[in-house]
Length: 231
Image (tube, rainbow, N blue to C red; front, side, top):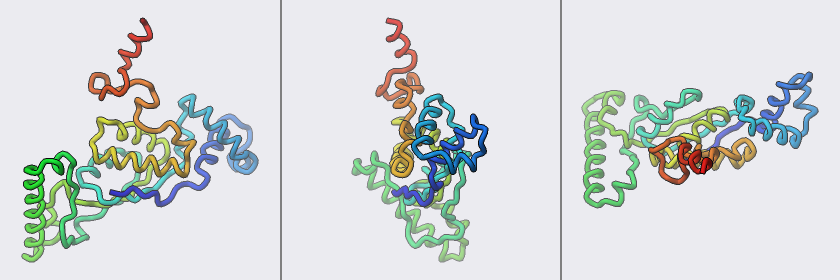
């Protein structure tokens, strides 16, 4: 699987810093963009983010090409509604063979792997046979499984990416989506390290697990943290 950062807002961090200045300055954003230095913007942006005011980073957007993931994974991704998506169509793309994702739990179990590969082989064969029978690809695709490879273009603003990472970098997130989220986080940190300095699973930023009793145990729950502080 791949997560490639295709494009992002130029000077994303300075732009977010200018947005922060705009809310409390008599000057307009245009003048602030020309007069404020990157260092000034970075300093003020960091201060504003520490206050929890994340609306200013919505002005920066990032576009990814996510490739070779399963349809099961993209069904989860598109639940993040403050984003734009364009996905490879199974209506207009005819596949010569079925590319698919194999979960690690199946990969390491020889009996399960054998069953899984046979299912993928049968699905691919059925798809090809249906096409040869004159069935349109949009109907033949119904035999394809959730494991089928797909590609998707994703555009999110920085604030939505924060939300995405807080949920999908969590150890409780589905393994494939967590891997993609971690790859996407690594990409944006290369071009906007300040914006995403504290981005990631919520527990890392908060110091406790917001999942309560469902947590993985890496961090204490809020209840446990309060009990510890009380003692």
